[in-house]
Length: 145
Image (cartoon, rainbow, N blue to C red; front, top):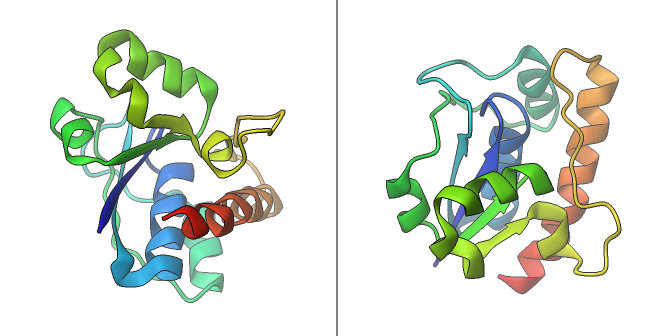
């Protein structure tokens, strides 16, 4: 079983969305967690993320958490939402480099855009577009796992 960790900024939008979607798509084949570089403990999902996941029949009880060294050690694969997130992790934890990729980079090495846009504070349609972008990458990743 692979252990996958998704990382974004606040752990209330993109990374928990990716976590919930991968858990639904891959089921028992993976263990999944998410965290944020600037996350506090126990913040709820953003309303947009909750609404999009509920549209897909997913009802998570997510509470945000900050990225920790323990989470990085736990993960077999660390997937960030942006190149900036990836570079921030490398500054403090260079040893994780072989297991660290952006989500889009791991899904498709030839991708020109490595970032998943942050829908925070945006419309429900922006959250929907983010979920489509994440799901397209996850579909490719599941084949690799």
